[in-house]
Image (cartoon, rainbow, N blue to C red; front, top):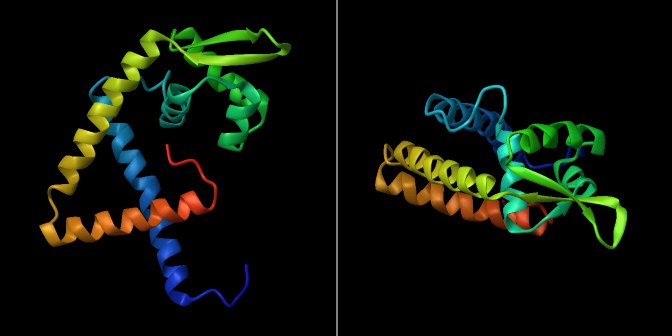
Length: 156
């Protein structure tokens, strides 16, 4: 990156990159404590995969590309979800070389429970802020979402 990047932008980048992993670790820990995520079987990353598949079926390659991993790495992650009956693999009727991944009914149910609990958990953390802080956070998150959208990133 160029040295011409504004110091404020660098500070924002650092704060964002320091904050997000801690937020996700705390959320994952809370969900595991409530038995919504199994330590060995479902990670936050796999939860994200379920979230992507909720919107529409994907091929293994499409899902790997979205997560910036190789198809073999994605296949290993999907294996856990298939074993837990959260995702199914189906041959693409138009191209038998492709495998279509779909969320099962059980996957939909778990995803709905995790989504509900995740929102409730994060909302309880945000409630600790003053109204002014909550408004600032909300405005900042709208800006961040807009930035991600402009970059062509996945908001789910």
